[in-house]
Length: 443
Image (cartoon, rainbow, N blue to C red):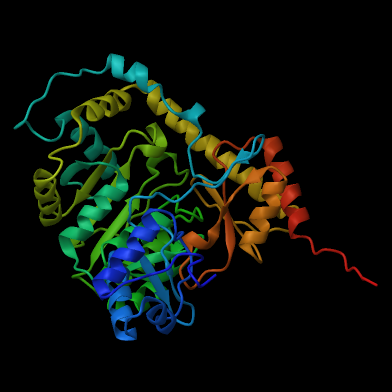
């Protein structure tokens, strides 16, 4: 509905319009994704000129509150950077929630036991921001995966690292080449920073080199890639694709390149990198999926200038990531039990993806899931399919939030905790939902 439901805007200036719309989003009068009236209808309703409305919408776009697309008009962003968090998918009693991308809690280590075993000394202002033992183990792991990890720092999760790297290099209005479909939270972050997502199509092996080249020719000043466990499709780079992308990137030596390896060792596929020889680069390695989402910690590697800028901004803000968290992660990484658990988790996630993909294929349904915790299933119409599956007891994520312009409608199914019998039942239900309804005739 483009009349903003019962909400009425009253504003005398562009700044007033911005304030009114932000307040409406914050208090829930305007919902994420809700379309807005045309500029002229907004102007008529608010009693201001179309030029003033256009200026207000431009400011809201810069802040990431509003998204405007050709031939589709303006709408409230799916994840506007305001106080009210988007409502999660409803989960009725007895339904299985396969929408949130969570790891299987049964395959996460015991954090309480790790906290009891870890050395947790009192640390005060002025001490080193990182635990040397944690940096040493992280560097060894990154180097083994081909990441030139000379400079390292600790950040509060992968997205915190990406945000700080982008802020260190880019300005509002700059374009960033991103995967399409891609991580919804990344799209929200870019818009909140005033950056422009430049969509690059992907297949099961990640970004397509031709699409990346086109985005860079359009003027993108940075590129963000997921080397494995891509969210939402599970795409993973192989050696050939990494070489193709590296060839494109070599023609743009000044480009900032970021690799977000958010799944790390539980992704279920070997790492391939495009960072060798880059001047401006960064790579994240999060512990959220392997050790637990509430451990808000990731390692950030990068060139000396990038890491120096990130550390400098950290000192101006939070100062450091809690040494208690760092000590718990270090304790977990030191134990053989954690290593065995991570290997078991990677194998389980691989098998659960495989079982669902094969069950769907047996019923004529194509799906993608090369690595990671999710399976991506193209569908004719997302809302109808998610609604029909909900009636059958399955909560899955509609793909709209993960798509920009070049990808087809789809649903994302988190398979991390999906048992074999569940895979068969879910595939059977999805096949029934996608089957064309028999023709009927009304008299």
